[in-house]
Amino acid sequence: MALLEHRLPQNVAGDFFVDESCIDCDACRQIAPETFRDHGDQSSVGRQPSGPDEIRRALMALVACPTASIGTVSHQNAREASRAFPDNVFDDVFFCGFTSEASFGAWSYLIVRAPEDGGNVLVDSPRFAAPLVRRIEEMGGVALMYLSHRDDIADHAKFAAHFHCPRVMHQGDGAAGLGIEQVTTGEAPVQLGADLISIPTPGHTRGHQVLLYRRQALFTGDHLAWSPARETLIAFRDACWYSWSVQTRSMERLLDYRFEWVLPGHGRIHHAPPAEMHEHLAGCVAWMKTRS
Ligand code: SF4
Image (cartoon, rainbow, N blue to C red; front, side, top):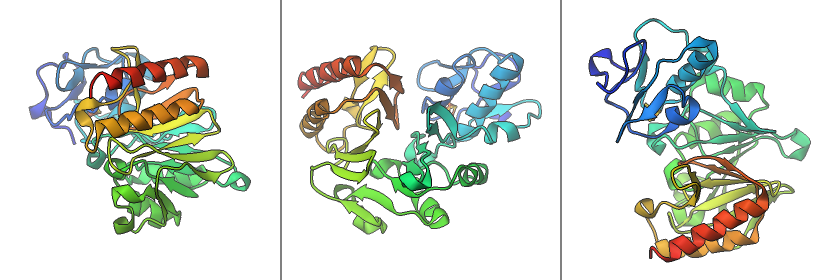
């Protein structure tokens, strides 16, 4: 719970505030950009929300914050905001909100599919929060949990136990020691369903993998994201825990695939026609080769 006595001085005056426990994960700035801003190494309220829509988005950011760093001076009912997650990104793909500090606020997603198509897929793990779990139950539960890599697994065991769903994770990230039901190995893509391909992308971690859905959306974990500052796709050079040269090679292999959505754990979501996305990806590979 955010503490008023620890309110950051950078907040503008008013009801909403961020306290000093903020870990700068960027979630609030993506969810309610009209309210929250980056003032350096943390977020603060740059403008108080006005009107029901802005207040609703600010409350959704409050609910999603991994460290409960967002508070309000007055009593605000966040019940509706809690039920707003999973929040639609496009078609049958939803952002789960309720990020976890254990994953440094990484984003997780729910793909909603009919049971005859294999059922819903939870991509990486959100916080195991009761309102979210209830909403996911209402949306059909979880048939498969896909874990991109070891950093973003948060409450995976609780979700797997609650929804009785198998988890998919790569051997290179210690999947066997975590009791993962479906352990992927090697560097060959694995077809997980008619519309799902797991693509190993070692580099950020040894066992990192990304998920291609319907040849339309790529769930990229911490491998690839959009940078609004550079207006292109990027990889995180300073957060590469295994091998930059291996990650560069993994990125190059992604050029063989077409997709129009990039949905990362950290960094920004991006949507563009496949040819444009491919160009950005090629540019990212070229940039990575200059940074080794
Ligand atoms: S969501 Fe919470 S931790 Fe993340 S930047 Fe905003 S206030 Fe900070």
